[in-house]
Length: 188
Image 1 (tube, rainbow, N blue to C red):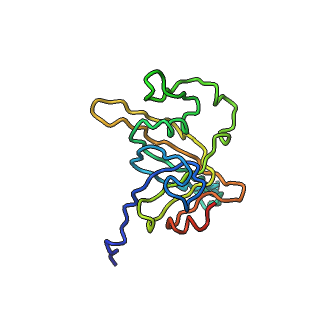
Image 2 (cartoon, rainbow, N blue to C red):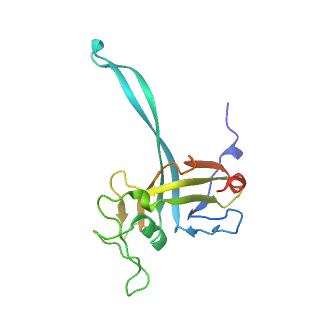
Image 3 (cartoon, rainbow, N blue to C red):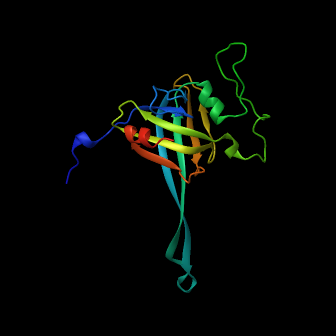
């Protein structure tokens, strides 16, 4: 059976942080986070493996322990709002007034501090309201490894693997993926 090509979607949109009213005009009372090439939600399963020693440690079953949920993006420009979100230890533009300054170490995010202190609401707002939008209720800036900043004469300036860990909020919600009109109906 083949899938009709009209069902294949390219969901172009914009990333907004801390929207307050999805029924309002864009950016819905929030802040637009730069030019995003791609935005992705990943559910990463966690499991406990049960092995059988009599058969050399053969895997015989596994227990589902839930999911880790994370959102990732590829930033295609030097957006001060996105940099402030991802790098709390950054500073406002210098004398140039243009480029946000990144520095390490800093004084805002220090070792031993909870990253949830920097949590936000994220919204992937599609250009076409009939397309799916994604609302993440409690997104915490997070790196599962390294973060790569590309500075090159041959490639666009980009910040790859910008990442948020998606945690449950106080109402036990993590995310909602739905048509944008349905997101408006259930927000907040």
